[in-house]
Length: 260
Ligand code: IPE
Ligand code: IPE
Ligand code: MG
Image 1 (cartoon, rainbow, N blue to C red):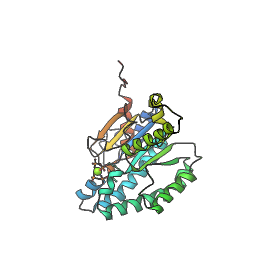
Image 2 (cartoon, rainbow, N blue to C red):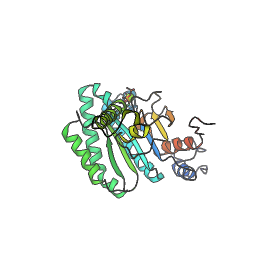
Image 3 (cartoon, rainbow, N blue to C red):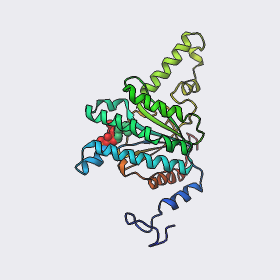
Image 4 (cartoon, rainbow, N blue to C red):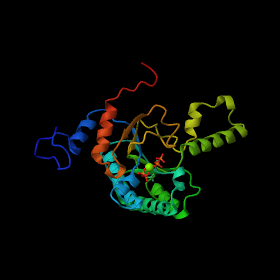
């Protein structure tokens, strides 16, 4: 509990727990192993302030950095961030190219901190279509961090849930053609093993910022029984405390998986 008048910053009511108290609260209960986030609302954040949309993306990078730190501090096993979808290519060219260079630069500049935190970066999505320099930059960071044993940070980049399933079905079809697998043997496990990050458990919690009640082609197979949380907060305003609040809400839910 916050002590009135001692620790509360000016931008929140004094009787609401702050970041440190929230961290303590959520740590006292079982954590989700895997949290996935649809980081939405950068454009609206900028437009509301009379800035160009790309200014929102720059602020969004700062929010992502804060959330990665918070997730690691909390002790999450896996954090997946939706950074760029297969549909985001439909945006104006200058927005797309700014996003590409921002993502490339920020992944690169985070390398020392990822190493210091023992975080492993993995990229989910198709390499095809991504400018070679951007892809190489990300793959370099993924390579450098490959032996890190702490939190896994999964960046969904040029990612589409349907593309991921198409790629999985193609891989399985090839195995069928090679005589390694009979069609009637194909199970959920085979499909799971053919996904981009086969060893990663399904998300326990999916957070979407900025109020949209949709999944926008994200992790379609993996979210079958994921708890969903939509917050009206725009992504650049999303903080460590917001992540801890989301986890606290998750901890208060009862998951049934179709049972009673
Ligand atoms: C999320 O913010 C960032 C990406 C999709 C890359 P948006 O750019 O979608 O922001 P809004 O939804 O237009 O406000
Ligand atoms: C989803 O947000 C994709 C990312 C956050 C990268 P969008 O802004 O692209 O989704 P829609 O268009 O509102 O569904
Ligand atoms: Mg959006």
